[in-house]
Image (cartoon, rainbow, N blue to C red; front, side):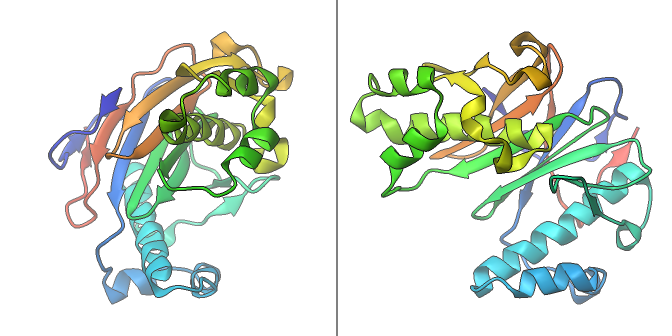
Amino acid sequence: MLSFTAKITSQIPCLEGDDVHVWKVDLSGSQNSQDVAALTEGERAKINRLKHSKHRLRAVAMRVQLRHLLGVYLCVNPAEIVFQKAEFGKPFVPNVPISFSVSHSGSIALVAISLNNVVGIDVERWRELDNLSALVRRNFSSAEKTQWEEIADDQREAVFFNIWSCKEAFIKATGRGLGMGVSSCSFDLNRPHKMTECPSEYGEVFEWSSVPLNVAESASASLLVRAKTSQPLLCHFDSENPPQMV
């Protein structure tokens, strides 16, 4: 399982081929008023619809830092970045060579950036779920359900979120989202980052790389890339000290 570097990265290599850079972003800090003002009216309206102030603050931090991070790769002012959504809601920046995927859970956020437009990332804080059995019935494949019956009760929370992060990352990579149905992709519960079934429209299992990421205790995170192998570069992001491309 890959872990993030312990220090802030000051320089990063330019992306090539199927390279993927994964950034860990802290959402617990406050953002300055100038950065917040750079958000679009639509972004601010969406954030203001969130019920809890804690969630609003984290959403602001996510959007502001995403703009700063993409600004490094695109060599533009973060406020100039324009986001659009694909047919099924996957966000992208038009007319640029990079693609990205974003996920956050609590104060942890991950951003995957690549030239490969089939990349997805997901992070899940472990938490008690009252409807765990129902979630398994609705969202696990037949093979996964069979394996689930063999999982010890005290291991089920960890196994569920490991598999869920893989499934979420896959549907983000395809751009289809939950509408595709996460039961259509399958992973080995005993080796959760081994894909065992892939919807035919997205190729063969061997064409995908599933990479486990170590982000925190009691948390699961996965990167899915449509590439036979993937060795992502993992870094912490500090918007006050953004890295330089070399």
